[in-house]
Image (cartoon, rainbow, N blue to C red; front, side, top):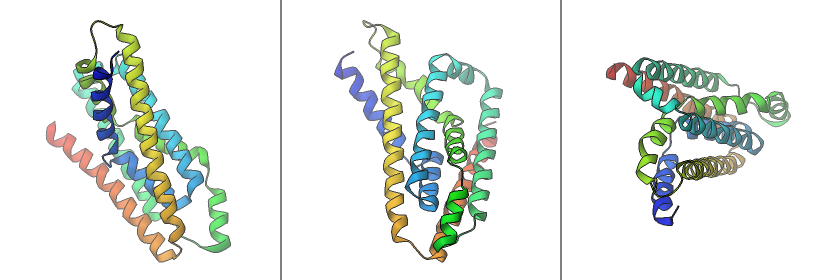
Length: 210
């Protein structure tokens, strides 16, 4: 594979993952609410979620989704409902300070946050559709196809991981400057509202296109 084939794909992928979406909103919300430890957990969840969706695409799931409107619609509805669920949980999350805050953070399971990030990323059809629709445009027919697909997948997952980590670290740094419970409550409710809004918009868009 030449640089001329890889670089355009990398640029297109970087643009796609940089656009704030459900995954970025989740990463930022958890980083603001729980700190760097959980920001890293969400980043790991995003990485595995991207890897899952890209691998599924490579194995043909993307083709099935593109061919089956019913299956694609079902996946969209599941993803939308999950986003709304996470948004409601974040909206209702209690905000405490001092020693009580430390206790609350200790009770938050890293595995659960990791699972949330993984599910939101893996259930987002955007990555699958992008991979199936655009990868063929960058493939060099003179080189083995599977090796190129593997490189493209690794590139996309790496860019998605770096992007999520960058958002998470920035949000964690901002969190250290935000100590007032009232501000934290506003951040939680803003993030929750955005997640709920993203879920509602996804559901409405799917209904309008049905």
